[in-house]
Image 1 (tube, helix red, strand yellow):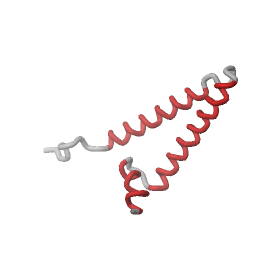
Image 2 (cartoon, one colour):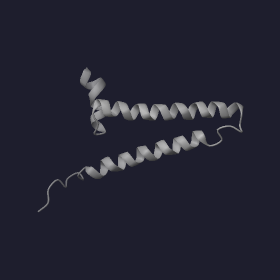
Image 3 (cartoon, rainbow, N blue to C red):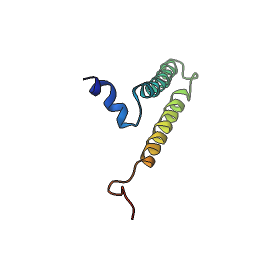
Image 4 (cartoon, helix red, strand yellow):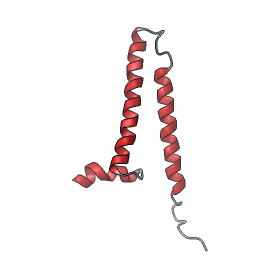
Length: 83
C-alpha cells in the first residue's frame, strides 16, 4: 500500500517522494495565488488583470519543459543498443 500511495507515481516522473512533494507544493502555491487573484479580479476588474493567466502560462511552460527533459533522457523504444 505504501508503494502504491507514496512511491509509484513519483517514479513515473523520475523523482523521489520528497522531490515530488516539493514540485507539487510549488505548483499548489502558484495555483492558489492564481485562483485568489482571479477571485479578486472577478469583483474588482482593475486589479490583477493578468496575474492569473501569467501564473498559468508559467506553470504550463515549466511542466512542458520538464516533460521534454525527461523524454530526452529516455531511449526510444526498441533502440536500446547500437551496432
